[in-house]
Amino acid sequence: MNFNIGKVEFNGKNTVIIAEAGVNHLGRMDYAEELIKTAKRGGADIIKFQTYKASKLTVKNAPRFWDWEGEVNQDGSQYDSYARLDSFGKEEYMQLSQLCDSYDIGFLSTPFDNESADMLVDLGMQGFKVASCDITNIPFLRHIAKYQLPILLSTGASNLEEIAVAVEAIEAEGCERIGLMHCTLCYPTNPEDANLLAIESIKQKFPKYLIGLSDHTLGTIVPAASILYGVSFIEKHYTFDKTLPYSADHWLSLDEAELCQLVKDVRILEKALGSPVKEKKPCEDATFKFARRSLVASRDIQKGAKIVAEDLALKRPGTGLAPAYMQQIIGKTALVDVEEDSLISLDLFE
Image (cartoon, rainbow, N blue to C red; front, side, top):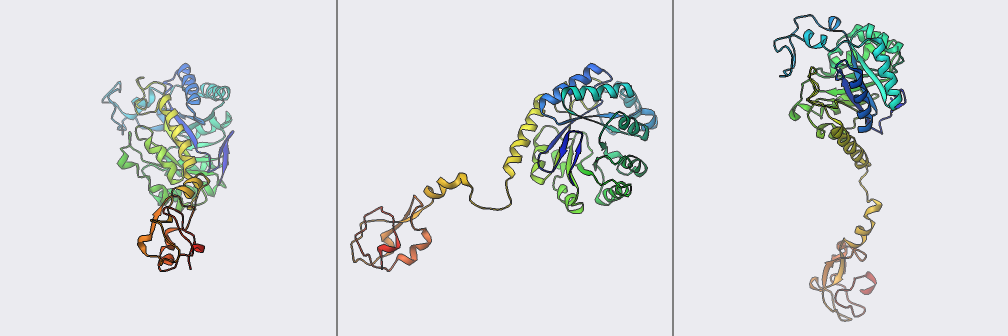
């Protein structure tokens, strides 16, 4: 099922690239603008932020699920890390939306609670991205589904049954504009854990919904390769400077040059997919004619001679009789003289 988020069309044909900026703005609007500007320049269709307050997201002693040497407090909790980066409020998200408009790039932000979702819709956000951690947060899914906006749902650390329950909850509120994103919830994800083949099982289980990828591997190879499995949109962490402090996402994010490479590779692979029908392409016409082999005379053949295998050879070009005709020619009699290396035709023999 196709849908639009703002001006960006999710149509299953042109792969949508989402630059996941998260909170890599570090609470600074100048950094946020640099993220937006460079993501647009790098070829992203949408830039996505995150909207949360640490006090609503986690208890104060929840262990971190990531290991990053840049943490200010190495022995701290999730709360300590998130609280350092949750300073943006409604006014700042309005500015983010306006900056995205000015740079002509789609705006999204992942809400992590009902109030954040309500605020973002009030600001004009035209779709939702739901983080993998909330795939089992059914009350939250029902809440955002009531807005009848498209929902991109990440599926990291889940199974098909959990995805089905989440989809059913969204559908129960009358929302069917859903995109399901394969994801492995490891930061970073090793290639052997990317499990791209799982995309096929998600497609089979939910055939009417578009499938995407939320990728946490390093580099661009894995997300680009997902094109070969039919994904329609790709989300990738993004920063304009991998060395910035405070956010654990910077070092594992793409920078502008890598984003450009991802977009370039994706566009090439889109073209390379072609059709499931195996047939000769127009670009192969010349090779079809001149690189294949034909039956030719391997030596001069006199009129009246009975043809034996040694009289024949298989050589280019392929504009004469195909090799499959060899057995039909052997044993026939030449009606005319045939010169060495000349193409064989059926009317030369009886």
